[in-house]
Length: 359
Image (cartoon, rainbow, N blue to C red):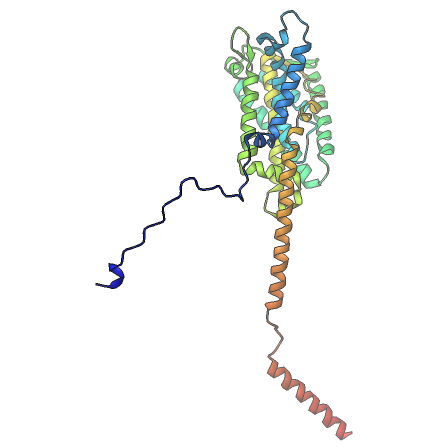
């Protein structure tokens, strides 16, 4: 038996009760964490606006703060909110879409034309409208990425094209500026129950409010919890720096343009099914309403872009130092070895000396 096996092992030191906290770690209070969130500023602003209107409301019974009043202003805010989410993501990515408003009217008119003129099932018409919107969004994104022109110029052209098509084609087919949709069309009832019905009777909130909440929650999760959300922040902060660290800049921008156009199509479908028709001027001029809700995300956008830019600079300096080390350690390569080179030089000198003696 070895001596080492007979020696008892030392027991671990007992833990001291109430060990002091590491002084190098600074604690952050809950209030400080909340103040660091950009969403808190938007929430405080929304509450301030609500309290302002609720205070100055002089209607009998203060209808603004009642449930019936909430039904009225959430009806208008829901369609704005759906588009504002899409436009906010696009603006965080460094672009904006001036055709977002007119796209709602184009989508609704296309839906009405397919249902009324072509006698298409409503659900098939909805799918066709979404595909059309995706194509328009892809076209905007590809033109912005390929031509390097500002998105203001590209989408302004798209705005005028869609606006002209809305008025011209509608006047040509109906001799008016409106398409009506019959509630007897196949699939109309089921589609209207999802896109254009109400809930919470007898107050009858519009389903668009639920769509607005769901889209906002989904977009928030994508923006803050996914890799694609980091790409959006990076592309909007510095496209060159994002490209240097491997972010697919072109694909990210095209997806954002496509999502914006498809969101406009959803709003157009909701309006057309709810009112059983739509006019060619629907959505025109609402682009700036959608864009006005982007400021609450700018602070986080800038901070992430700043961190990304510093990371790219650090990587660039590291690669430069690595390249210098490689240059210093690479052995010299000539066309032939040193010994043969010296021998050739000595032979040439002897030949020149012999030629001089001969002369």
